[in-house]
Each structure stands twice: as structure tokens, then as C-alpha cells.
Amino acid sequence: MTARSLTELVDEASSWTPVDWWRLELRSFSRTPAQRPLAVLAPAEAMSEHRGVTLGSFIQGLAYLFAVAAPVIAAAAMVRWVLGDTAYDFPLAFAGTVTLVSLLVTGWSELQRLRHPRASRASAVRMLALIHVIPGLITALIALTAGAPFLQGGAWVWIAVVAADIVVHVVILIRGPLPAGGPQNERENLQWSIREIPPGTLAEITARRDAAIRRLADRGLIEPGTATRALTTAPGELALTLAPELQKSDPQRSR
Image 1: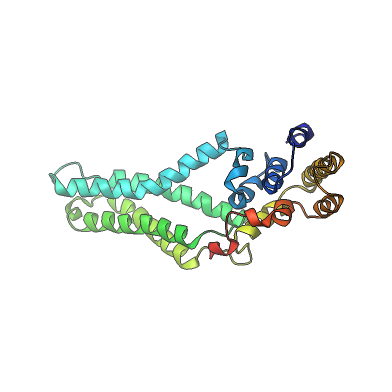
Image 2 (image 1 turned 90 degrees about the horizontal axis):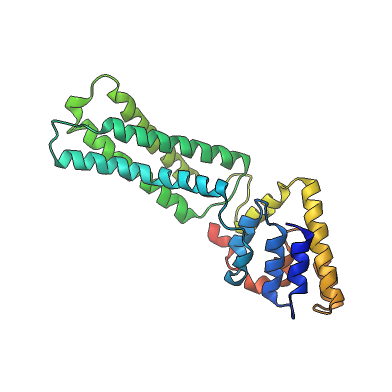
């Protein structure tokens, strides 16, 4: 985000409202991963400053969407087969293949979680586990019963893949949504994201933010005391300090 962009936000304002603090901070962290956890806390009125979908986030979103849908697709193929003519087109290889791809996406997600720990919502973790475990059990049950005569050659490899996906998501469910030694709620997610920004980049972001705050004071849009208070806030804490009443999410909801 350029200094001009922050200057435009200030120069276009005829007054300065609490939501504008959120807009300024979101704009300050544009093009950094920290904008996402900040957006989770920001009010809807400020979300026009969120950078939205990028090519990278779009591809990642598609991968995660496939990882969620794959176990259901696999189980649906097995159910369709067992309800039809079970003498032909045993779909275990198909079910195993899509589950394997899903498992690889899960592995990548877990690697990213180790590199960048983040708190998740317990409800989301439970839902994701159920979406994998229940369809996986259906796939395995059909394969081991109605499909038993077709388990020849490498067919058992696909059973192992489905079983591995079930086990991985049971482990994730048992582990829970909060990483040990990592952030424990949405506000701490933001703090960790800020710490992961390279120091030089963070210094530039802070300098541009502070310049915008001084310009607000020069234009008389904020009181000198408010400007002083704003300038002393840590990066990522500006809106939470100056307009906490607009915070969208309760940090404790991650539990």
C-alpha cells in the first residue's frame, strides 16, 4: 500500500468516524497476510478496504474446497455403485484417488499450520473432521463388504489411503482448534501475523500510518490528544484501541 493511498483516505474525509480507523488500518496492511486476521475483526462498513481475492488465494481456496468435497464425492461414487449393478465398474480406485489428492492438500495445510500457527474455531474443526470421517467410513465399509470380491491387486492401497484420511482427521479433531504455544484467539492471530512481517516492511507500514495520523491532526479531523494516542499504538492495534466498539468478533469465540 502506497503512502498516496493513505493520504487519499485522509484527504477525502470531511469528518473522521470510528469506522475510519478500521479503514485506515486495513488499508495500511494491504498486500500483507496480516490484513486477513485484521479483516476478521473489522466491522462490515470497513470491508471495502479488504484486498479481496487474489490469484494465489483463489487457487488456495479451490484446493481447500476440493479437499472438503473429495471424501463426499468418493462416498457418493461408492453408494451409487452399491445401489446399482455391483458386478461392474467398482469405483474404489476413483474414490481412493480423489481422497489421496484431498489428503495431500490436508498435509500442505498442516505444514502451513506448523509454520504459521493460527487459532481456529472449534465448530469449523469439528465440521471438517466429520466431513472426512463419516464419508470415509462409508467408502471403507462398502469396499470391505459389497466390494470385497473386487479387492484384488493394488486395491488395498486405496483402502489404506481412505483409512489414512480418516485417521488424520480424527487426530486433528482430538488435537483441537488451538495450537499449543501459538495464538489462542482471533486477536492473537492478528498479533502473530504482525510479528511475521519483516521488520523493514513493518517499519514502512508504521511510518506511513503515522504520517496519515499526523495529517488527520493537521486537518483538524482529530484532536491532538487522539493523535498522540494513535501514534503510540502498536502496529495492528490502532483500530482496536481507537474504535474497539466496532470490533466484529469476540476473540474468545475461537474457543
